[in-house]
Image 1: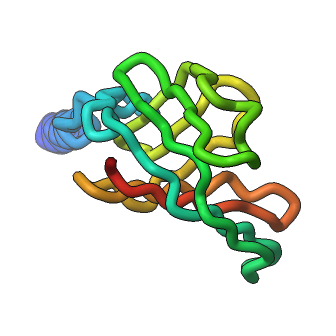
Image 2: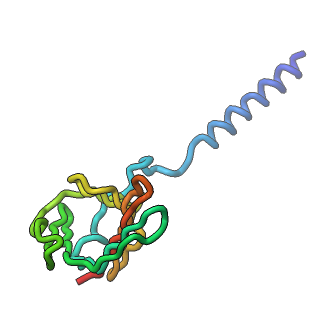
Length: 141
């Protein structure tokens, strides 16, 4: 009986040790938080085009008539044409999540998914709502 009890106790100890070691991971990042470094976004971005989609099909494409100056703190929108004239000089705060690849402009704008971000190109896709979304394509000035 002692041998049986000792064997069971040792087996239980090994199982507890195995479970406790596998429960510990090396991932120290916060879940869902991601990095908020905006250095890749900082600069002047000229809007090349805006394409509207509905149910996955192109509804409308317009040439850009604005540019965005992005600093580490905010985005300032500048108009280059009549369509966005009411927004000229508008400065807005934003939240950039590098891990989730999202840009959230804090002022009623949709949440944008960053589909492309390089030293010369930025492509933003708005969150889909009721089957429609927009894709905004920028080039670095």
